[in-house]
Length: 263
Image (cartoon, rainbow, N blue to C red; front, side):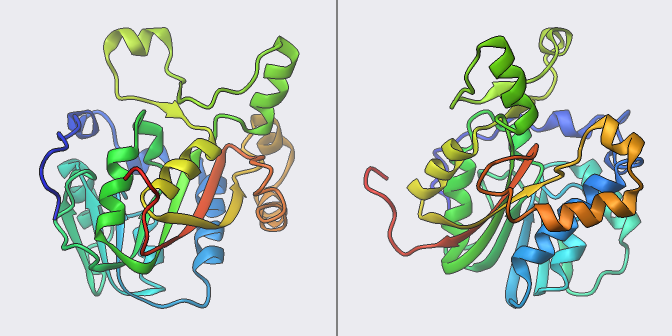
């Protein structure tokens, strides 16, 4: 179990009574389906005993894990999100919900077969404590799916090239100045290579990479029917993965028995 030396992050942001995460996804069906396509593609043909969806909110993707795991746990630091999950998905078999900070997961060492961390890195300027805890609970040979909010997607690279800026290896805070002044929840993008190095340091090795939500642009949504967008998405995710093309990058990782030097 965790030795307790890592402090809990502030999580009260996510219990805002004026924010309903399910409503956030209204009108974002393309992005949701793109993530479902990616998750099923990475897990296809595999079977897991126990899967944990860390920071899974109301369980939007936790229910997909039920197609591949005998038991699924939704772990989230927000009582609001867990209550919402109970209302939206009231009778899921072999499914439970746990109030948990991702730096202090209440699971034994090497006890979990699959861990997912999707749409969470946006809120973690320094995700290394979460990665260490994720690695602790995952058994050697186990799998993880981690989504990276990509700071060097193609549109960002083009705009940086025009402005004479290079992509940063450090987290990029994308909040507005007003949001920063108000002290809103962290909202950052990460360089996928930096995240891959941090994961490798705790024994999580990247085995597959997908570029996801490749058409997440107002113009694409205005011009293309959703079915066409999803057809293109299915074709594009794998070849564009290593290019870090889209705004979201999905890593499939394997837990090795050996952790890199210095850890």
